[in-house]
Amino acid sequence: MQKEHIELLCLLVEAARNVSQKEPFYALGPPLGTTLGEVLHNGIPGREFAVYLGDVQDLASLGLITIRHFNTHGGFDFDVSPAGFAAYEQLRTETSERVGQVSETMRSFVESPLFSTRYPAAFERWLAAEKALWSADTDARVTEIGHLCREAMQYFADALVAGVLAGDVDANPTHTVARVRYVLDRREAKPSERVQAFLGSLLDYWGCVQDLVQRQEHGALKEGERLVWEDARRVVFQTLIIMYEVDRAITVRA
Image (cartoon, rainbow, N blue to C red; front, side):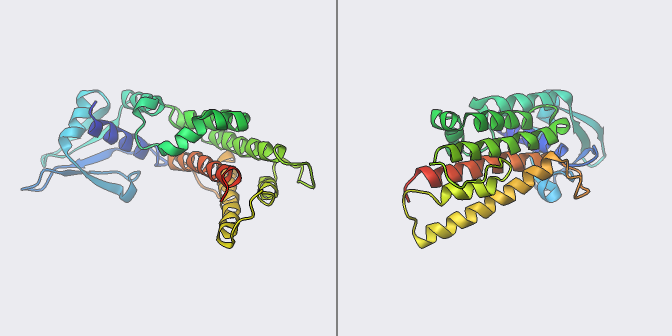
């Protein structure tokens, strides 16, 4: 597949996973004098996007989408096919063809020997969550992803605490905000006022991510909401970002 086909397929699969009930995509033919049509679906950010419909039809010829009906105005409705979901999973799990995933800086961080050595249990749990995110059965694994991210954050905090001198640290592994605060407060370098303010915000950020992860693990039952793929993507990405930032705050002098 060409790059534009890969990007289009990924957008369609992720849109299909972002609605609570399955619904078709609608492709509208381009207005006279233009070359781009539109695809409409409630799972798409903004609910629509402009696209060359030839690319959509190319996906159909590859068996990655199934066109259901054509109309008299050059439009049609379609669904992502099982082969499309399988191709998406393969694309998302092949490191050589990652499309739109976490930044290369953070990927190199989480895959580096430094991270896996300092935080082996957190490393294992986060990679398992990421693999579940890109899998073909993500919809059935949304709470598992939350559980894995919660464990990643807890094991990360455990490793941080183990790296400082024993003291009056909170021994409860679920109290990750207090444990991370304990370690940040014991940084060797005394931070400037602005860096100190950032560290305080970083703790707030950690707490927000922890709340998101717990919501994910419990299936948003407390909120009475239905989790979709975007919820799973958010917790996987944000768990990595917050671990990255906390590690940098502790290991890099600033």
